[in-house]
Image (tube, rainbow, N blue to C red; front, side, top):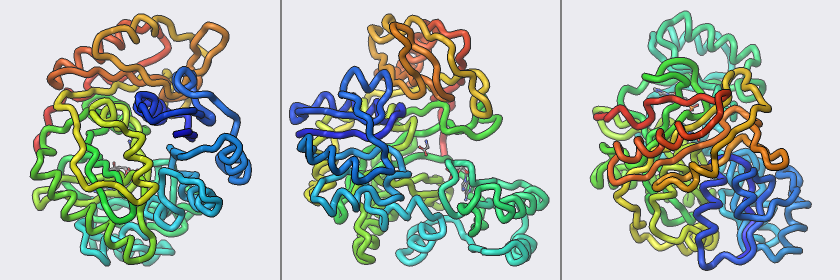
Length: 422
Ligand code: AMP
Ligand code: GLY
């Protein structure tokens, strides 16, 4: 199969590593890619907004599958443009990607198909939202409806915080994304990211991971794109996995098919495991970052035919084989992240680290300058340790982190350290 992968992050590097192992892979292209992915796939210049350009490339290179990493091209209908030219893509149509593109749509779907989630109401203006707030009180969660790069959510502990968030969103703090807002009950429990592969009619679980979203150790400081992840998660046992499939994933897939918005691709359910069971926090319509870096190394099956089966509507509902080993992914970020990451510093010692046992390096925000590797973003590298236990995986990940010579970088030292119980 000839494959084109779209994206440039650690998630796409982890996807590239898994796809590269496939005996079914023939030619492999990436756009735009990064220094890590470029060792596995040929980087080409394509702009994800330019559907015509991507279609022309796919025809020229006889691409059998386009794997779309990030959410924006999905929400913008790239899958549909490709489908119109009979080019297969892994990733949902624009109609199905609305599950991530509009939180109000996602909530509506949960309501229609009785999928457990937090109680909520939606508003188009501040007065009605504030009246609801006075009725419900704090804590409460205030969310912008549309895509806001993970920043459009305020978990308000006080009425004043909630009012300020409502005002900021209607004042345009998140642009169009905040012209509709949701007020939501705050869920209490353990958060987990759950992945399922879906072909429109069928779904299979692809494991789960726990992200560490806050910048600082002990879950303090501002929210980030994710500072690390680990998999498997101890409380996501076989019974809880089946509950998530039975109460959330299968009803959602059946419901979306019924509404003629069949969901094909990776369904990422952001869950809270509450005292009453699993509840949906949000849906994403693509692989999570950095969860993918911790989950995919545990997959003991060829990923490429699975992704193709999702696009072809031929996904067998047979449980996937995941290694019982643990994976811990530590994100190395440039100092100043998330507000103002410093770019341009040199990273040394990566060759040595890549040769260490049970260590996988993925690139996220790096670039090459001749033989030098340079920091070129906020989250720059991800170091994944694999081991028989969570402790061994952690030890390997941090031993590798410590062997990297990059004084201008930092990481959280407690990824996978907290043994959670719901
Ligand atoms: P998001 O940007 O949508 O991933 O949301 C950011 C974070 O806000 C989530 O990872 C949760 O930790 C938190 N969050 C969102 N909705 C709720 C909720 N209803 N109850 C508790 N926490 C929430
Ligand atoms: N790690 C959370 C996300 O990918 O949205």
